[in-house]
Amino acid sequence: MASPFEILGLDPGADDDEIVEAYRRRVKEVHPDQGGSRESFKTVRDAYEQLMDGDVKTAGGSGPGDASNGGGPTATRGGPRAQSTDPAQQIESHVQYLNYMVLEDNGWELGDENLFGKAARAALDDEDYGEFTVLPHESLLEAAERRGFAWPFACRGGACTNCAVMVVEGDIPTPSWQILPEDLTDRGIRLSCNSSPVTESAKIIYNVKHLPGVDELRLPATRFKKARSDD
Ligand code: FES
Image (cartoon, rainbow, N blue to C red; front, side, top):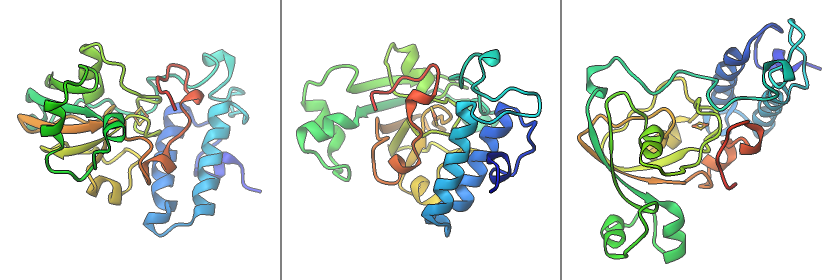
């Protein structure tokens, strides 16, 4: 039976970043929406989770979850940050946000064109609806946190989908190294830990981690040392 390293196409000495990068690549290759199968998807996901749990020793004798490297995955490992050298992404952007939980509570539909108008009239709490500025080189998640909001996240590296948001208006590119397959990015799904607007304004719905398609890719937040998610 293939080892988790073999399933991810890695040498046994691979470090944390290489494991996360390989997982992001393999999960796209075997995702059912990309022509793969549920079995292959599950095999890749199980291999990644085994490595994250430290169940498999690396050549250096330490798995990612080994106590010698902090006892488990950290919240900051696993991928490039949102920053870009692209001048188009070095702008300040005003982002209106809406908590997906509010839609459920009010019986509002995701496709409702007047969603943000309804939110504006609903006297919602600041954490559920409002606007903040995303500074140049800042991710959506970082901007929300700078405002004191506790948006969900786990890996902060584009591998777990706990931080998923949906773009309703504006342009928010998605980096090629993250986990989302094309059908989700086409639906406007982005990962707030690694996405920044390139338009002066944007509207997003955050907390969409349980939407069909996104939820299937989601890794349990409990597996990450510094995660914040109510699951
Ligand atoms: Fe894991 Fe963003 S926090 S993908």
